[in-house]
Length: 175
Image 1 (cartoon, helix red, strand yellow):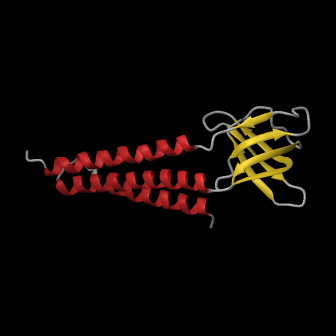
Image 2 (image 1 turned 180 degrees about the vertical axis):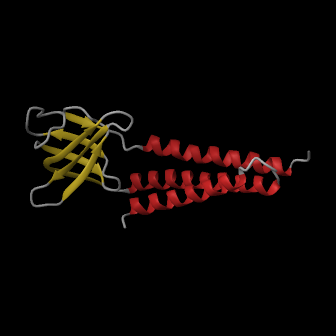
Image 3 (image 1 turned 90 degrees about the horizontal axis):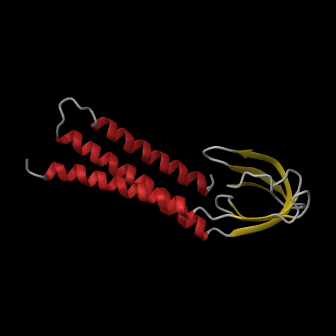
């Protein structure tokens, strides 16, 4: 199992466990302290899930080596909309084939063209791409490593923790 898969499975497991606790405590009929504790526990676990995923993913992106390879672009697919981007294989002569993804979804990347690509080994995200042949020869693309997204995910974890703290504080406050 790849590291990315382990991080994803751990995140989803913690998230599911937290949601189960929140659902178990969210029965509005006959609210009591036990149900509020379940909601606080669930929010805390969900917060841990988001914080874990954001921090570990950010760490792995920053410590993962960036690989530079030159090869042919194959099986190019472009998507538009909410998760717009391009996915393609970079076939290196005499070397491995890399499955890569870029946030760019325009026509600067062409099927069958030769490109020099620098990408993060951990999540296969393109950092730089330069086309060396075809109608877009000389096109240069630079993208970020995605650190902002991981920061926002970690922030969501902190917000869940804050919600858990508020629920648990209401349990200890005299009425």
